[in-house]
Amino acid sequence: SLLSAVPGTPAANFKADVNTLAANIAFGELTAMREASKTGGALGAVSEKELMLLESALGSLDRAQSPAQFKESLETIKGSIERWKAAVNQYGTSGGQSGGEEGGLYDF
Image (cartoon, rainbow, N blue to C red; front, top):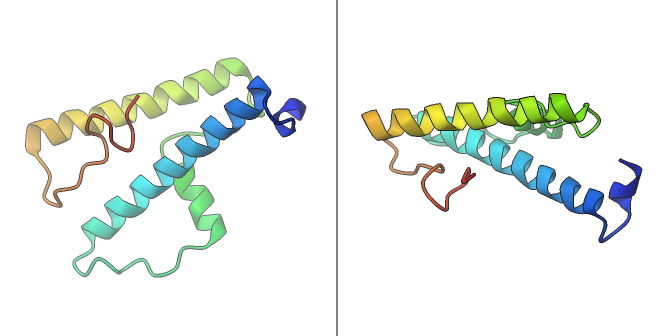
């Protein structure tokens, strides 16, 4: 984790990838909440703390976890996304936007 501050290291690349995944999860959660709102604006401003909670909505992505625990969290997140994709395929969407399609927000 100390090497994540050194540009160009595998640790720095890993940190950036985890940050991107967390941001995509938070954005997906915000989008889903807005689409579920009749007016689309029911959320208002989102605080930094609320954004951190949204990032953890599907599972913890704390890089300080053991490698085994981090991998388990990734598997949990992947399982949640796969179940969501299956539900979308089975029942469709009402909002029209589905961030999990090929090349979308959660493309693993």
